[in-house]
Image (cartoon, rainbow, N blue to C red; front, side, top):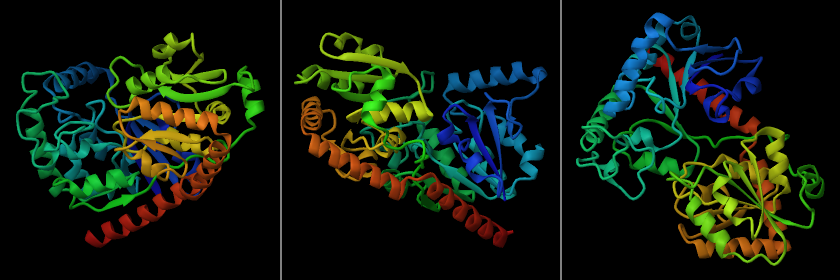
Length: 413
């Protein structure tokens, strides 16, 4: 089977783009990727960008698309795919992140779905809205995104009316397309079922998988030694996307909870990715900011932690929570997103009311001071990861779906 993944980029966010599936699927199945932003030199990854003669024109079109809030409707990648050799030799097309760089137009979906069987992993609710990546408390995505839009995504002269236009375009396009959807969580599946746009399309639940040979429990003492942390310290780990401009990840409430918390023992914060927002807490905590890390270094860091906090207020899955669980570290999350279901609703951690800094601080305090409970949840977290989130299971579920979709497609033609 020859599988072609299409996404905005390859190795950046490779756990979501199909990039990480290549090694696991080979050599039995051939995997190729078509991307707009190519960051690696792997021969099986193909750039969708035009040659230099057309690049200036295409960049102008993409800029115009963005400024008008057209959500990629002017994108060229879908239209040029059929002429590419890597598309011609593919058996199935798997779409991933197609809406975050104005390179792919959903207008090309009916044409592409006539040429190849298509599956589409929708990573967030964008596919079912007039343009929102997350709709928060707005329910207009269920009835047409009627103007005026209360939370326009783009600043343009059409910002109040463009979501309703997009909603109608998507409805028409999806009705003309043969696509199988993939979602990673029950939270997303329920939203698809409520969506007037997507409810008619087949939808399959396939949670993301992690490499359990990399993300596994390491000795906390040894992990902390390698990180230069006193083994007697308590450790709270989290991903800091930056307090300023954060819409989805709940950094505001995390920082407030840490300000409220009064640790009884020396405590270290490991702020992954950014870290600048939590520097002001150095008078109370040791603050480490390793930046963006992945693979074994991330697994080692998560193993060193007593708890991992992921207080997202909008989240369609939460892969880093699963990675923490796989290392035997319990997770604390807010209600109202995919995360409670992902962590097994208090099996692999603790769920607290959303946007409640006091409840979040209380949950952190409980696990820092109750070693037995922390260890129990950590063991349950690892077991849950083994049962539901292993990479081989993730691959197996995709292969079964690919085979079924190809059979259905061949019966239609």
